[in-house]
Each structure stands twice: as structure tokens, then as C-alpha cells.
Length: 213
Image (cartoon, rainbow, N blue to C red; front, top):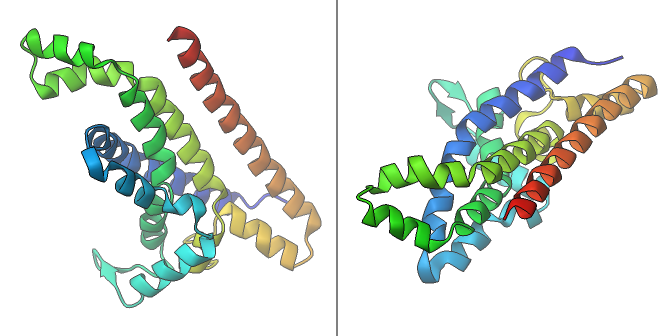
């Protein structure tokens, strides 16, 4: 059967991650567009979660969080610790699509905005943000789907505390361990559907963007 508590926790983690990481992704992406010589190094550093094994990231989080508290709450085996780890793990999924969207804006448009008397904030709000919205939406979809399915880092940092750190992916692992094949199949199918819909939406957004451009 479906573990609705774990499903709810996964969606809660995904929404909280989105709420924090999209503004951060926009700010970092704007900086990277004009980062100069250090740009490849920064991009490589931010892309590390894509190539490092989740258990390696989880181990470093576990070591870093041990004995640490934030807002009076421990970071290890807590939802707050999961949220911080989720933000780091999802950085490349949030930053790369947004960065590509900002890079696709012709420099002539920014120059015309400056000549029209718009300051940096007005140019961002009135011109850059509307032109980059598809990249931002794509980043949101990918980040949401990746957060829902994250396993290694969640297991290392949060364990499997019901209602606190036991997400849908951890619930599947526990059901397999307890030989509950029916429950594991139902949960796995749900995550498969979410992932497929997210990927289809992302490709659809990027496809419409290419056709328009």
C-alpha cells in the first residue's frame, strides 16, 4: 500500500526546496553569465552533485552536520538537515537551465534597455525575467522531480524517521527490506509517473523555447 505520510514528506521537501532554490538559482545564474575567467571553475564546482555518488555527498553532509544546530534544531536526522542537503544537491538542476536562458538573451537587448534609461533592477524585472521564464520553469520542474526521487543523500543525512525524514524513496527501500513487494511496487510506480511527467514537461518547455527562438 502507499505510504501517504512518506509521500507527503517528499512533496513538502520538494516544495520547500523549490521555494528557496529558485531565487538562489536566478541570482547565481545572473552572476555566472558575466563571471569572466573564473566562470568554468564556478560552473564545475556547482555541477559536482551531478557526478559525485550520492553516498559521498551524504557522508560529507553527515560529517559536517554532526553536532551542528540551526534555529535550535539539530541538522542530522532532521527535516531541516534534509532541506539544506537538498538545496546543495539540486544546485545544478536549478542553475543550469536558468543560466542557459539568461545567456540566450542577446546583449543588444540589454544595451537597448540601458540606453532607454532602465537601471539594472528594471532591466532584470521588465526584460530579462520575462525572457528567461521558460528556463526558470524548466529548472523548477527538474528540481522538483529530482527532490522527490532523491535517495542516497536522504538516507545518509536523515535516516528513516517516520514523519520527519522518511521520504517516498526511503519508504520503498524499507518496503523492499520487509518483503512488501506490493507496497514497494505501488510507491515505485508513483515515483516513475512523477518523474516521467516532469521530464516530459521539461522537454516540452525547452522544445517550445527552441521553436520560438
